Amino acid sequence: MFRKSVAAVLTCATIFLVGCASPVPRVEIAQEKLAKIKTISVVRVPEPKTYTVLNIGHPGMAFGLIGGLIAAADQNNKQETLSKAYREQGIAINNVLVAELVKELNAQGFIAQEQDAPWKEADNRYSLKFEDIQSTADAVLVVSPTIEGFVSPQGSTLYLPTITAPATLLGDDKKNPMYRGFHAVGWSPTAEGWRSTEAKNTYPNFGALMADPKASAQSLEDAARNLAQSVSRDLKRASNTARN
Image 1 (cartoon, one colour):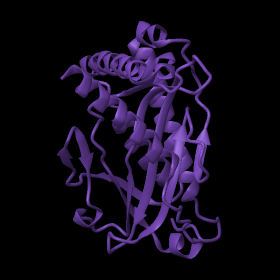
Image 2: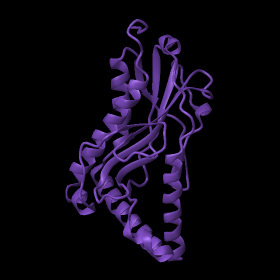
Image 3: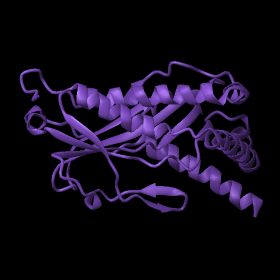
Image 4: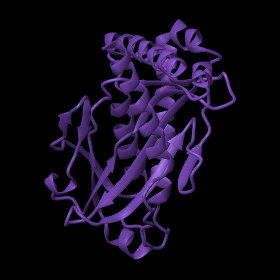
């Protein structure tokens, strides 16, 4: 049972990274469409069940299945430890992300506000059908992180506060995106199509980021703000088309 459960963790982590490395095509929004948008609803996003702690170059990965199981068990233990510390402190990174998105969009001349949506929970993950979103706004923005935590890249021992997220802007039909972008702060997928921002802080090891959970959480909040700014830049209207 232990081997199966840990192997499942390793498999999920691998699929997770592969999925992030190969986004579907971006959809750039045309200025004429942006000019017609006055109100935007920004969907509130549930907090992750587990914050990511991932060492892509974990030494255990060099020793076949047994080494992989050890690496997966180590990852799982670190994630549970970090997530427990954040839960106890009431950390809510996605609240920061959504609030910053609203702030940035309002600063650009839109009328933006937060909105709930019918998220569904299954297999320890959340999903949302865009067509189920109820909104009277001209457009709805959904930015839902796929990685939220700390990643140590291949060939490095440093942990980077990392958030990766697709961003989708929907019109009235809630089906065909007017805009789709892919944004990363900290560790960045190597595939084309991602807009990447470097992390402001790094941690030499897991112990360092756990030494002060409030400080490491602050670095993730900074990453959330950076990601919101990256998304808002994609939705910036030309000065001659902005509406007040």
